[in-house]
Amino acid sequence: MPTTTRTYTVGYIRDSKKLQPSPAITLNGFWLAEAGFDTGTSVEVRVLPGCLILTAKEPQPPVEEPEIMQTLRKVCKLSTRRQKQVKAFIEDVIAPKPRGV
Image: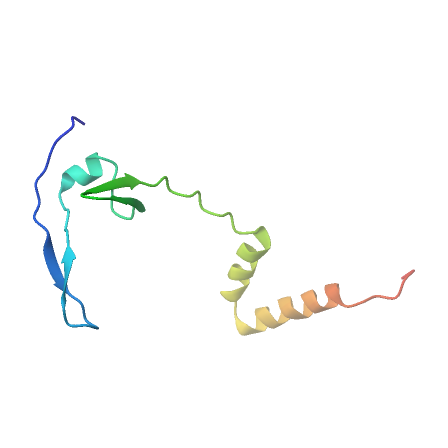
């Protein structure tokens, strides 16, 4: 994407707590996605006197949910009777057992 200069005007939004105008800049357009600022992208804003630098943050890889949690989600979709059976099984497995048995 070629470097492009765009001109915007600082507007305002009304601060709901103080009922006073607060400076605001709204950027929109398909050029944002082309520049790496797609919907949902986290943005770092560096503030310098008379200058704002916007940097798109790399998305964090999703944290893999443990397999046991995935299985428990499936159990939640079972009937109440089946859920009780699974609960009884789990309680039996985790119940302390005497040594040597």
